[in-house]
Length: 424
Image 1 (cartoon, rainbow, N blue to C red):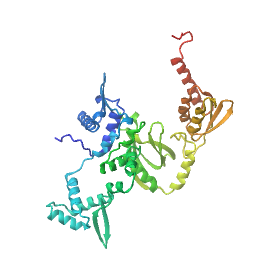
Image 2 (image 1 turned 180 degrees about the horizontal axis):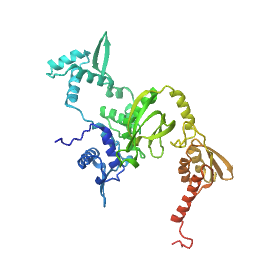
Image 3 (image 1 turned 180 degrees about the vertical axis):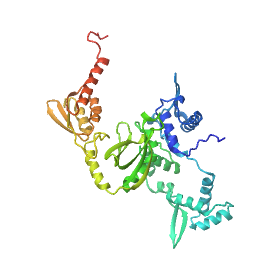
Image 4 (image 1 turned 135 degrees about the horizontal axis):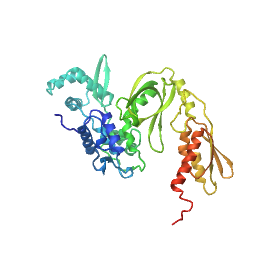
């Protein structure tokens, strides 16, 4: 029987467990419907071993829920980075790592055959050439080993670039690494470099740090490469509403990636892409994305990107509405009340957050926002944060205006009190 191990082979599976059970923290053991209950137990123990003091346990009638509880403003390192350092390896992987670095430690260059002969003769380790070649190729791609062609033969040597030398050479680089280690995108890279240099982040603490999105960083290299090389991207995504049904839980889309969008409010990240099959642009949440794989080159990428930028001028958030390739928009106007002398911060906020809309003064203490967007619902979600200052809404769909007014009536019923209610 296979024993329990803290190391993992499939990061995607672990990412699912961490997100569903330990970040959202609303599921209990009985909600686990994938494989056996023992699998859930193993994953729970694995995450507990990584997170240590950051685990929280809540008991209810449904059972015990386990979650990660972290105040980002009081920790120097994102604890979720531990998941990236837990990849399993084979005996040959670890053996070849130390043997090859020992063979090349003196700085000399050697051929593949010379390295294999030394492994067999001096270290009494029998490895075939293909296995050693694959390991050398892997380390060359990662920058651990340098390769140089002399004639028709490749010579390998240990790379002279090392973290310690760069940190000593460039003043302030260590502080830059400390900051980079806690940034939202690819902070795991900065953290890895810090560990390689034997350093820790003891300077920067980020109060509102959206740490959970570091789990999506594993998808970004493939997405960014597809955009740079103007290629198709095969996405496998899931919907929370359909996860209970295995037959419809996952969906696959072949898309042309355009841009990564980040919410300044939640830190949530989206991939804006074109779906050739539907002839429309759409946005995919990265935390609902299982994997992404590059495909062939999309020939008309530049022309498509120009069309995308035109469409983005009518997108308030990430929604392209139900429009196809291009579409018409219905103007919508929202008038706000603000006293420029006593409340200049209200006008400043309207100017700062209006995005693709236009703002103009239309009367004494009245400011009108004109929106030409594909999805007015996104405008209304934002506009409701100015509740009590909205004077009027014009244009847009009737259903949007009716929903806003009905929400006001419902709020009045809930919080307004009865007419004859006395203040205590």
